[in-house]
Image 1 (cartoon, one colour):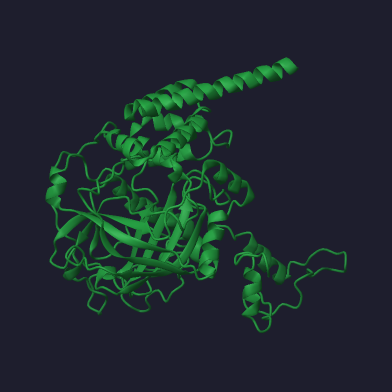
Image 2 (tube, one colour; image 1 turned 180 degrees about the vertical axis):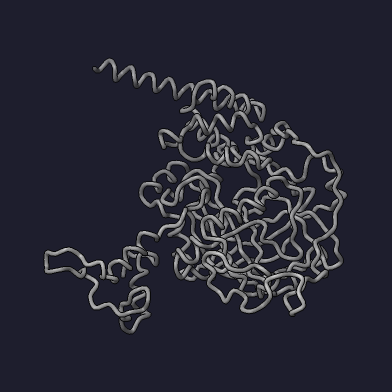
Length: 512
């Protein structure tokens, strides 16, 4: 049909794959005589309780919705493969990097962060960039964003931070005081906030943005040598961003813009690709580095730790069913495989628990049995049994205790984690003032072009002007420590906006 895109034409495309309609059934498989009338006593009489066709339908309908993700609720998914193109086995023994040319199947979910499942794809927000590789050693989830940094460096603050991105508990409205109060009280947020309000905060869909593991991880080779690393997905289609006015227009005209764009591109054979690169830092370099290499609010300078090419990700299949393969896909940073390990990164350590925990809440304790989460390239053999939604064979008659004398699965010391040494006093360390501005200054002065700096200042001023006066002053003070032009520009523009508002209000009052 002319003028209709692939997403809009999905039902017509489905029709072409069918030779005839299937027989309608109940959930138990019994054929249904009619779907348009309930079983009643006479044409005007009450509905009979024995009408299983109706009660089966309604009971299932009442339970269709599961809890949406507390963050990253709105998203799009796709599937494809990762192909290793460069040898990094001197750093890492993980299966996807086993040899050049190896292909590993994968699934990806892109998302916004703060909005609900019905929110606009073009909102000013970080974008989730989560990849699940189905390897012979189990599933590896690289759960990142489209920015190499984050707002905070201690996971204790994460629930409060997310609350500020959500709705006021009384008004149920997005609240500029909540947002900027937290941001200004925690200046470690300045780096990520500067990314967020730059052009990068409104990417043009999901096909034109980079992805980052963001955290510091460990790679381990076959000799047991470990290295710290950061993962980068570099987009091959080129980076494209939306100007603020275009993003706002699309939020009204096509709030599902990014989902539609990804679906149509793949349907048309225009498969998006990304190149995986890594930065590597030795343990010795980490010990001597001038700042904490595990600080999620900072990057590793590429001039000192250059990007090393690894492979290429290709997305070539749309979801067969959104709920089954996108709403139910469950990523967790703790889903690692031999060769990939956690670092001391505090934010990573906090996420290792929280992600799997929320999946058990959303999807049930057996969420790893859901087909899209099942490690189908590996055989699951363990001593976990039973629980809600246990839908596989529950490991049959195998023993459910360890150790045992009856050929139950055995551990293998070849797969021990790498050994490492830690020292330090156990206490709660305050990291609020760990150099919050130096890298932001580089970003503002050297990375952004003059017109990009202007738009950054405009975007912040247009949002911050709605916060309380005392919060504005504190926020401007923080940005001024990055660069006087930064904070001063925001203040100057807000003063202009306030004057225009007063003039407009005065004019309205005079006309009355």
